[in-house]
Length: 279
Image (cartoon, rainbow, N blue to C red; front, side):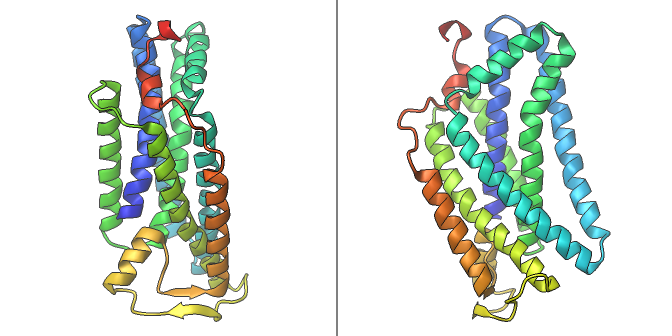
């Protein structure tokens, strides 16, 4: 539940802030009539994300056992690659994300409502597709019960509520620090998803070392295993290859992510609510 909550909160808040930047810019520049196009683009992006998630689940459910293992392993590795790129992208781009979106909106306004809706669709749709893929991969690593789904629902609800409060200036938080902390947490979660992908390929026999284990403990239904599996994606059976991949990925990615972080990056919350006249 914790891992899906974290993913939904982080990705949902990022999408909420993007929508807030677009809406705030139009409102403060007196172009409220163009808001319908923004919301139409956002709605289309949400439908795309839901459809993509449904397609992943449908495809997985209709494959043979070996085919499902291949599909799950491939999507896990792809999801880790995307989420790793995403946390580094946000680290680099937070400083200029508002200005970039404002420029796209200004250009789209001269081309009509469809172009403006397309800006919103592409800006939010990318977040939605990444979230759907990473959530699907994460769901495959945790126990099959209602807890992950509840984490997803609560995370999205919290992200929308927090994004709305930030837009209305009811809440002020250090967004840069928020994305830094959640970025570290997501990297750890991604490590669990990555080794799940490795496990799928080992189970298929594509990669050796399936019988060379670092540990075997407890049962799949024990409370301790449920906690570490649901939070970090680490099961009660860990092969040496999985262990090495996890340590290398998490340590190297964290070093790169935490290295030379900007000391004074404007927070997206301030950028989203700043007056265009002041920029």
